[in-house]
Image (cartoon, rainbow over all chains, first blue to last red; front, side):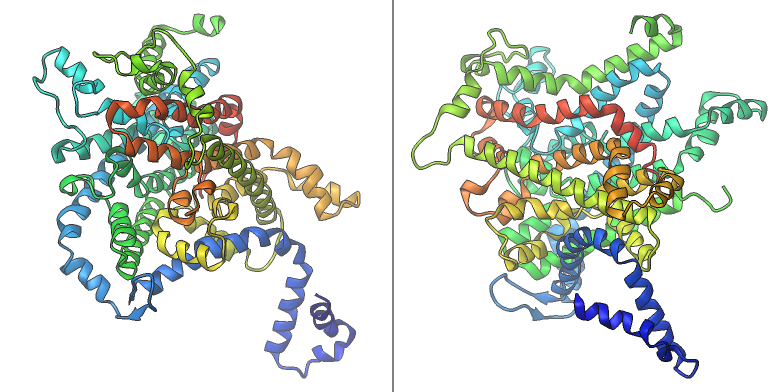
Length: 330
Length: 284
């Protein structure tokens, strides 16, 4: 610390260093260093976060990118193989092309936008209620998302249990919809839809709260103005006034729902108790990563999958920015 | 409540009824959870299965806490781990992200735009994406099998910093200037002015973090091999996975309720604060 201080302060004591004769870049660097030193408390406040961020987010992301170019079994030293992992991913990996990718797309296409739209609809409906009633409904809709993952797997397992004592089987048999118990979680035909329903059920999370907050920020005078400008019904009001006014919150909420969708893989393992589901019915990219990482120990290939997922997430986020970014003139 | 109800016109009443229906539907599994946790064993195996408990009992919880077989880790150990980890993580995340949020909001310095941009991009970051490199990092730093492996990965929370920064943005600069004129140092401003004014955001970050940490199984599955260092969430999955069907409900339901209840209570208490924070959650 002490040596740093003297190094920074030196130019102050010897202004000759900053004489017009010295090259411009030296002066710029010194100036820059001095400004950084002046704001050192700012960096000090940021330090704990930045260190954790570097160790647990930045370094892992770069490490994943680096490992994706290697063949690595977790024990030996990674061997550089160029883009082979990615080539294999798209040309050789039968399971990925036949099951993982279609499943992920189906799942993401329904749960992502579906959960997002449902969040908005319910947030908007709740917002129409008097303030004192809102809390109850917010709680009821938000509660499932608190139970995401582990929390309620017990209930779902019991509900979709394949024997006659499973709640769903029991209910359907009692009213004669089915005659024999259905193996909901083992049958490839149903597993995916069960995953989607459970995920939708838990999709009213932080994004939903952000929308509720956003709705409160809309200036009520805008609605009056809208009426004068010829807005005829509530739908037009929502489309032309509400959504444009709360774009920032819509964007935050969109990002949160992307996150929720991309990390959803653990639901299938929790429900079935297996990383690889029967006939790959519920196999999402995150299951594929787990399969290659901790069942097959092909870490190079698993990293390539991670990179694919990261790029997918980034792409989706850019897309939502395009849709919801507040324009400069608004 | 009554006064509010009287103000409601007919379309509103329909709306309330509709939302009540949806709300109840969303709540059914949670009602299951409460009832299952209180059912005695014979009712759990009852055929046909019932939703509501007939003779509520705390037997499941007693089994959970009092039974200790030789050779296995007692449940109280998992419970203790979960509590310690959750408490430490919340404290760390709140302190670290408030500090970062304050500086990013109110100070001017080089690299600020860069750091903020990085945080915005990493809002979409999902830890599961980089399972392997994190595994290497955790083991490389010698954090495996320690509480730090549970705690530190959560401290790197871009969402918490973002929410804090957005919330602190709306504290008027004039207030901080006034404090500065009175001779307050940065530390003083931070502790005496910023922290008290950010209480809603702190509550929100607490809730979000608690939900993430308390239900996390990644750390216990991959970064911690020592059974005595694993958490309640992990124990729950090992119970549900190893015992098939409805039978898992006995122990599982009791643990699930223990996992869910603190979340629920936190949210009930801080709900308004959370939405207040969300007013400023917009990404521009």
